[in-house]
Image (cartoon, rainbow, N blue to C red; front, side, top):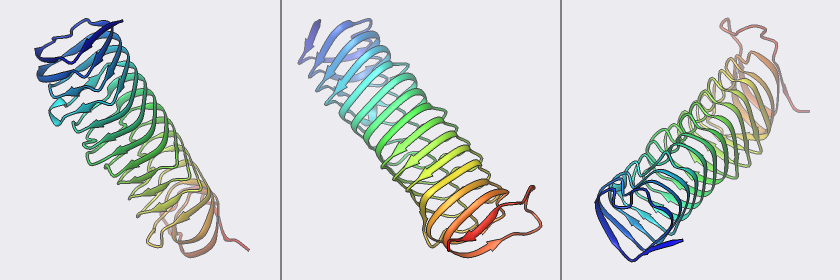
Length: 281
């Protein structure tokens, strides 16, 4: 394996078509597309300041690296990526990619990250700020995500989330096949227009949660006291621990809770309008 160590590169495409190489303690200064059309790279202890540094790279390991705000859109069209112990301050990372794994990564400008990614696995990742992470991505496994970005997980398929804290708005919008375990989900309009959503041991907060959902399942979940107009036009099977303040016009299913503040059933309910709602005895 070629070793490129302790060097500074600038300009356009300085490491174009580099294959089977270890990049160690290098600095990419101003410029574009420093590491493009490459393969089989190990990138360790490097700092990236130029634009679009890692595009069209197959099989790349990135460890202990820093990506500055100027390195926006840094990693696109790169398949077989393994990243760990990195800090990212630039927006619009990870687009149109397959087979991506991140562990212990801090993303401080999470604007438009993980767009069009399939086969995504993240563990111990933090997302700060930004909008629309994970847009149009699929086959996603998440563990210990801490996110305050807006509009996370929109138009996604086949998503499993574990032990995470997601403070947001409009999350899991128009998704399909979503399972969330042991997590805190706080934000309005959770999972609207989605299909096959299962929440297990989750803590939920926000207004108008879980509406327009087809095949919604809740197991041992809790609701914040301020939650209202929940389950409107959804088909739902819900086992709720504790109190839920307001349920509105569920289409069908069975909802059980320890206590219920109020149920709104009016002339706008949709057929078959046969949801059973009961307080646990």
